[in-house]
Image (tube, rainbow, N blue to C red; front, side):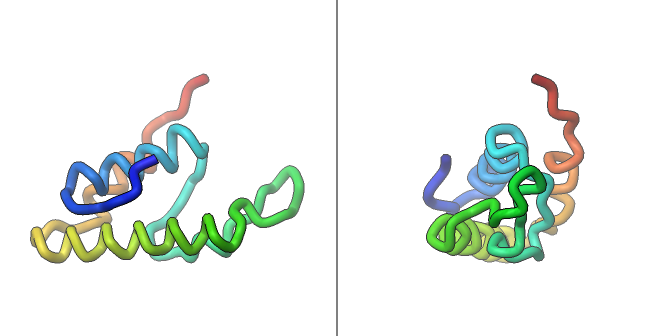
Length: 85
């Protein structure tokens, strides 16, 4: 998984990782601490994992703001991609 968000391509890579690898249907405004595994009813992420992802999504907002790009327009197509496999 990407660990530093510095470019729009990093924003896209992070979103793709969440959707394609972690199989997460996410919204960029949500706190990663709030995601629950529906099979176990346990938190999807540990506290440390959630804090790290919250930092990365915050960095995504910063990069998009700096580049004057609407984050939702970047992420929506990725979030809506069908997942196969």
